Length: 104
Image (cartoon, rainbow, N blue to C red; front, side):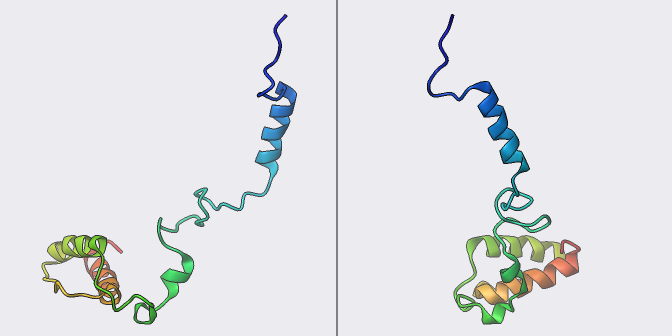
C-alpha cells in the first residue's frame, strides 16, 4: 500500500479544481493576457484610438522598432523616411505606408 503525497491533492479534488477553473469566467481575454481577440500584442484599445499628436511621449524620438519597421515599409513603398522622426510622426508614417503597401 502506498501513501499519497501530502503535496498533491487527491485525484477527485484535483479534477474538481480543474473543472471549476474551466467553468470560471476567464477575464484574461482571448489571448490569455487581457487582449481581446484581434488586438495586436503590445497595444491597447485606448492607445489604438488616441491621436498620436496627443500622446504624452509623442514628441520623443521614434523608437528602434518604429524606425526599423518604417525602413521596411519605406523600402517597399519606394520612399525615403527622415531619420529625425518623433514617436507620433513615426506612428502616422507607419499608418500611411501600411495603407500604401497593403500591409495595414
